[in-house]
Structure formats: C-alpha cells, structure tokens
Image (tube, rainbow over all chains, first blue to last red):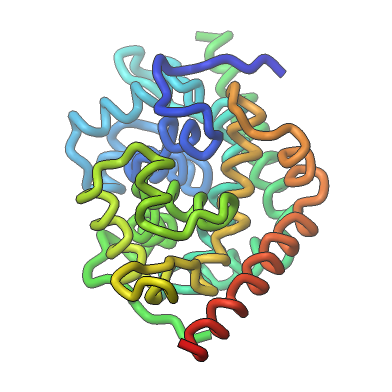
Length: 149
Length: 149
C-alpha cells in the first residue's frame, strides 16, 4: 500500500495524532458519517443535515479531499455542482465509526437505531462488510455517469 | 447499563456527535491514548509528553473527568498531586483507539510499532482483552493504596 503524508506538518508521527489531524475535527467526522451511513452526497445535503455554516463546511470538505478521504466529481445534471464520495481510504474509516457508535450507545442516551447498533455490536464484521459492499456498488453508477457525461 | 447524559447540551443525539462532544477534541484523545497505552498518570507526565499548554491540559482533564471517562485520586506520597486513571467507560474506548491506529498505520507514515499494529490488526480481540487486563490490574494497587492511605 502506498503510504504518503497527505498534509504538510503533523505535530508528531504518533498514529492517533496523525489521524486526528486528518479527520479529528468534529464536523469532518460528521461529514464522513453522512457519506457512510446516510447517503448524503452534496454540499446542500450536508448543510441541511448538520446546521453548519457554509464557509466552515466548504473548508472541511476541502481538507477531507486534501487528506484523500473524500473525492468529488461534477453532478451529471449540473456540472457547476459536485457529488462527494468516500475514497477507499475514507471507507476504511468504517470500523472507527462503528466503534464510536457502539461506545456512545453503551454509555449515553443516543438516537441510534437499536437494531443497527445490535448489528454493529454482535455482527461487527458482517456489518462493516455490508457497508463496504454498499459503498462499492455506489461507486459503479458514479463511474458510469462520468464516462457517459 | 446505567446511561445518563454526562454533559449538559449536545448539538444532537446522534451517537457520533455525542461521542465527539465527549472525547472528539484532539488533546482529549491524546490524553486517553497516554493513559491507555503509555502508562502516563500525572499532570506533569501529560504535559511533558504532549507539548500542551498547562491551562489547556487542566481544562481537558476536567472535561474528561466530567464526562466520566477518567477519574483522579490523590497521589499517596503527596496528597496535593493527583493520579489519573481511566474509568470503565474510558477503557471501553480501547476499540476506538485501536481502529484509529490501524487506519492511520495503513494510510500514513507513522511511528507506530509494527509489532503492536500487527497485533491490533490480526489479533484485535486478544489485543483489546490484554489492554483491559492491564488496566484492571492497575486499578487494584490504586484501590489498595487509597484504602491504606
């Protein structure tokens, strides 16, 4: 696997520290969550879902793209707009998200769907494999669209 | 399990959002990392390890204690000082830390020990179980010390 530094300066080379530099910001992880579990794909969808200021959202999207975690391509129906998707590096964050959700559900009152959390806890590997399959399926129409566009 | 809201206001009840409110700050997760993997226990040890300003460190320790993730008790030899440790809720973050480290090692150049990352990746459950056992063993002398103090 090709490993490269995706951003200029890290405060250390500790893996936890580097990971936090890349996606540790709260808004960034919520964007990743929206892409991974809620099929949100556009600037407008993130904006409406999160109640985030549009300049902050634009900055976080640019950072995640720079970190190689998300990518964007023009929307087929309107080339001025973009569709965002997770890269392979981004979908590799699925186990991190799953463990965060399982932890929060165990210790806090959340609105997580009980059936989903049970799947995550008791059938963790199957749940992550299914998330990856959904992601892979979604990549295909996007590629077809950009070829035909 | 007794679930209660540990902090006053969350921006939503989404489990990812709540988790980030509780430990999503970069310094907070580095403190948890130091407690979990590096056996750092005191204010001075965190300060030296992280290059963090002491007022920020004090604030993050207070937040983590308020969130029920860490606890403190007086140092036996000097009751003006404190020894910090992870609570059960804090050690439950081990799978989150493990997945973050595995992800960063896969995609970035880090200083993670290759043998440790191999253990995390190939023997994930055993690694987490061992981390929990180490934590449980450490709790015992602390309890003995505070009984005899």
